[in-house]
Image (cartoon, rainbow, N blue to C red; front, side, top):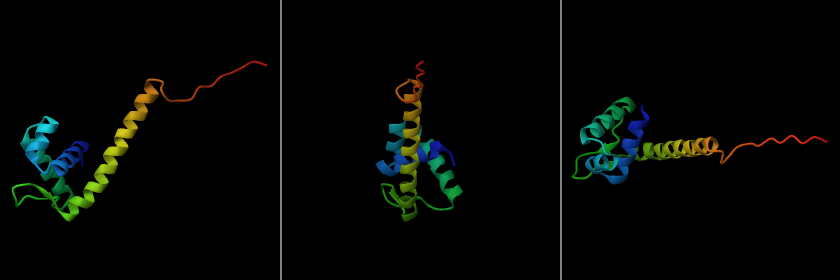
Length: 99
Protein backbone atom coordinates (compact mmCIF):
# COMPACT_ATOMS: atom_id res chain seq x y z
CA UNK A 1 0.00 0.00 0.00
CA UNK A 2 1.38 3.36 -1.00
CA UNK A 3 0.60 6.80 0.39
CA UNK A 4 -0.23 7.97 -3.13
CA UNK A 5 -2.93 5.30 -3.37
CA UNK A 6 -4.49 6.60 -0.16
CA UNK A 7 -4.51 10.15 -1.50
CA UNK A 8 -6.12 8.99 -4.74
CA UNK A 9 -8.71 6.91 -2.86
CA UNK A 10 -9.57 9.88 -0.65
CA UNK A 11 -10.00 12.23 -3.63
CA UNK A 12 -12.18 9.79 -5.57
CA UNK A 13 -14.33 9.07 -2.52
CA UNK A 14 -14.90 12.77 -1.83
CA UNK A 15 -15.56 13.75 -5.45
CA UNK A 16 -17.40 10.55 -6.47
CA UNK A 17 -15.52 10.63 -9.76
CA UNK A 18 -12.21 9.29 -11.03
CA UNK A 19 -12.09 12.03 -13.66
CA UNK A 20 -12.66 14.92 -11.25
CA UNK A 21 -10.16 13.42 -8.79
CA UNK A 22 -7.57 13.23 -11.57
CA UNK A 23 -8.23 16.86 -12.49
CA UNK A 24 -7.94 18.00 -8.88
CA UNK A 25 -4.72 16.02 -8.31
CA UNK A 26 -3.28 17.01 -11.72
CA UNK A 27 -2.64 13.43 -12.81
CA UNK A 28 -3.95 11.33 -15.68
CA UNK A 29 -7.22 9.54 -14.99
CA UNK A 30 -5.81 6.11 -15.90
CA UNK A 31 -3.18 6.56 -13.17
CA UNK A 32 -5.93 6.99 -10.60
CA UNK A 33 -7.84 3.97 -11.90
CA UNK A 34 -4.75 1.75 -11.87
CA UNK A 35 -3.77 2.86 -8.35
CA UNK A 36 -7.27 2.21 -6.99
CA UNK A 37 -7.49 -1.17 -8.74
CA UNK A 38 -4.12 -2.16 -7.26
CA UNK A 39 -5.27 -1.02 -3.82
CA UNK A 40 -8.46 -3.08 -4.12
CA UNK A 41 -6.47 -6.14 -5.19
CA UNK A 42 -4.07 -5.73 -2.29
CA UNK A 43 -6.92 -5.32 0.23
CA UNK A 44 -8.98 -8.04 -1.51
CA UNK A 45 -12.14 -5.89 -1.33
CA UNK A 46 -14.05 -3.67 -3.72
CA UNK A 47 -13.93 -0.09 -2.41
CA UNK A 48 -16.18 1.52 -5.04
CA UNK A 49 -19.40 0.57 -6.76
CA UNK A 50 -18.77 1.56 -10.37
CA UNK A 51 -22.07 0.26 -11.77
CA UNK A 52 -23.72 3.67 -12.00
CA UNK A 53 -22.73 6.94 -13.67
CA UNK A 54 -21.07 8.20 -10.51
CA UNK A 55 -18.72 6.29 -8.28
CA UNK A 56 -20.09 5.32 -4.86
CA UNK A 57 -18.26 3.84 -1.89
CA UNK A 58 -19.12 0.29 -0.88
CA UNK A 59 -19.54 -0.54 2.81
CA UNK A 60 -15.92 -1.69 2.84
CA UNK A 61 -14.93 1.58 1.16
CA UNK A 62 -16.76 3.62 3.80
CA UNK A 63 -14.94 1.78 6.58
CA UNK A 64 -11.60 2.18 4.82
CA UNK A 65 -12.28 5.90 4.27
CA UNK A 66 -12.52 6.46 8.02
CA UNK A 67 -9.03 5.04 8.47
CA UNK A 68 -7.61 6.88 5.45
CA UNK A 69 -8.93 10.22 6.76
CA UNK A 70 -7.15 9.60 10.07
CA UNK A 71 -3.92 8.59 8.32
CA UNK A 72 -3.92 11.66 6.05
CA UNK A 73 -4.71 13.94 9.00
CA UNK A 74 -1.89 12.43 11.08
CA UNK A 75 0.61 12.77 8.22
CA UNK A 76 -0.38 16.40 7.66
CA UNK A 77 -0.02 17.10 11.39
CA UNK A 78 3.42 15.45 11.46
CA UNK A 79 4.55 17.50 8.45
CA UNK A 80 3.31 20.69 10.11
CA UNK A 81 5.09 19.91 13.38
CA UNK A 82 8.32 19.10 11.57
CA UNK A 83 8.06 22.35 9.61
CA UNK A 84 7.51 24.29 12.85
CA UNK A 85 10.52 22.62 14.42
CA UNK A 86 12.65 23.28 11.35
CA UNK A 87 11.66 26.96 11.33
CA UNK A 88 12.18 27.36 15.08
CA UNK A 89 8.48 28.01 15.71
CA UNK A 90 8.38 25.16 18.15
CA UNK A 91 10.95 23.45 20.29
CA UNK A 92 12.87 23.64 23.54
CA UNK A 93 15.10 26.51 24.61
CA UNK A 94 17.63 25.78 27.35
CA UNK A 95 19.13 28.70 29.20
CA UNK A 96 22.11 28.53 31.51
CA UNK A 97 22.42 31.36 34.03
CA UNK A 98 25.47 31.63 36.30
CA UNK A 99 24.84 32.28 39.98
